[in-house]
Image (tube, rainbow, N blue to C red; front, side, top):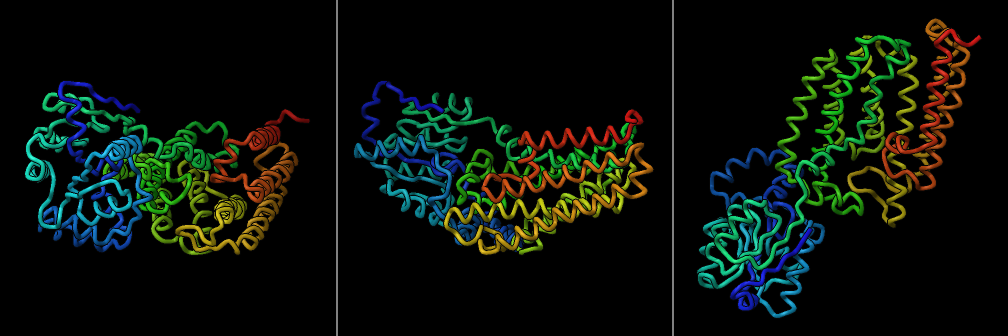
Length: 488
């Protein structure tokens, strides 16, 4: 991040000229057209059918229709704080500030009113789209050629800089900076750009891929440790789940923009902060889904992958708002990974594994929801955004979660003493050690949750927890000792 003020011939005079500031990608780190379109479709998907008609009547009309339907809080939008601080300094010195944008006038004025910085607003009005040459013409009519300084960030701003006395370049590629420098003196440069792919990778949440290791559980439970073909298929379906899960995470973040920006930590997510644009996200989603579909087909387990996508989309679009339904769907999203791994490896999920995992995943889903409600309670709120619970439900959900944890341990104990475990292991009695370890681990998660330590998905929390690693090592040791004829 850097700010550079140029000292050139005529520079002192520049400070007396009106400073006209672009909105999309300059003052804001996001594009209001993309934002308003996404918000309109989230509120009512049927509006997608009306978009072509609005666009046929002109880009300005499209912006006006979307702006009229976009209910947003200007305080929550991501601003370029370095540019904003510069504008406040200029305002304090008495400089005239103008918000000059191709965004719709309704959006521009709402932002201008919130900031209380601008002396005038020039924007698209539903008839005229004030972009590129049209914006340059409007500013020349108002201030005269080279009678203003302009702050922008895109190729369309070159037409305005040609008519301006100087340019302020904000978060622009190096080539655009050089082009702007060739046609106008540079008053200041603000560069806080990060490489877009970094934000996109972060939005894909690769740390969440640890949950897809569940695809290997059927192979391990079957004792097929040396089935090379099974492991190859398992790795393929693991990669497939990683791809489609990342696509769902991207889509979920785009659907939850307003709620994320109102959240103290989620506001730093790539889409909410403007590090990644909606357009980039919408391009990445189908690519990831296509990669996942190809890998799923190669693994021989496309049905589980399809079931996961359908469940995940249903959850993100509506079911996450339905109390209890959301918990069972979350548990199902864990379980479907088991089915995918079993189908791909050729070692189907047994009824014992299904019974144990269903109760355990239900407990983990309740951990996640209780942790969210406890955070809401500390913020003195009664309800979390897009959730069907109130803080008064915490005790009930905790009771359900602990009951599910102990039930999963009971099912595991019944499995250990059953014929299937005896046939698959040389020393099945050693497997009894798994029961208290798993119960201890789940009880520890619940203790961490009630104490307010659970800030992530429980499996993500466990992946970062050294005690959980010890439990995993203990489980692995017990399984190895039970499987190999090395213990007398």
